[in-house]
Length: 224
Image 1 (cartoon, rainbow, N blue to C red):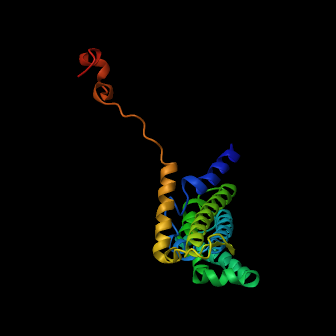
Image 2 (cartoon, rainbow, N blue to C red):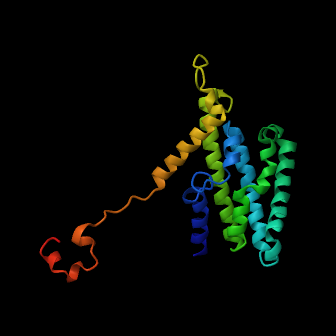
Image 3 (cartoon, rainbow, N blue to C red):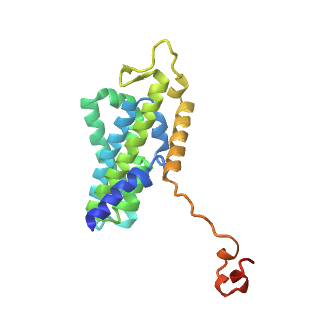
């Protein structure tokens, strides 16, 4: 039963409650760093790591941390893992660290990370909190990767260094700029809403919709 519950928590963050395309959280870094697929992927994986680790630690310490200082404690825990990620990227992937710039340390106050700590990890078991961190992190990463891919292909004509659009065709540079980011963001949100929105059932009208239809003589006669 627990496995099914954890799987549900994992899938919830990826699809039903995608933090970027459904809950509309973390919009600022989403629009800022998705000028390329590589940047979006780097930001998403960094946030995924911080989400999983912070959820794990906060869930373990939820009975120890006082309610009066819980938010400052959460920020300290999150900031520790953000520092680990930043030092790792500086050492091994400096190009990604430079591209993400100030938005990497700002993961500390990202509403996705802090929100999951407050709303989920502090109230649930360790296993469920880890699954929540993975699900939300994967959902965030997927959204950033899709946005970065679309903006990179349309804005530069290339993808991960490979030229997809002939050089004779001028790329649409607006997709590398803020207006293009907002446009792609809106289109992706519309697509998610289209495919996840439940179709409403047929509404009953007339006597069939009346709660007293069974006791009404008009219903048996075929109309009101």
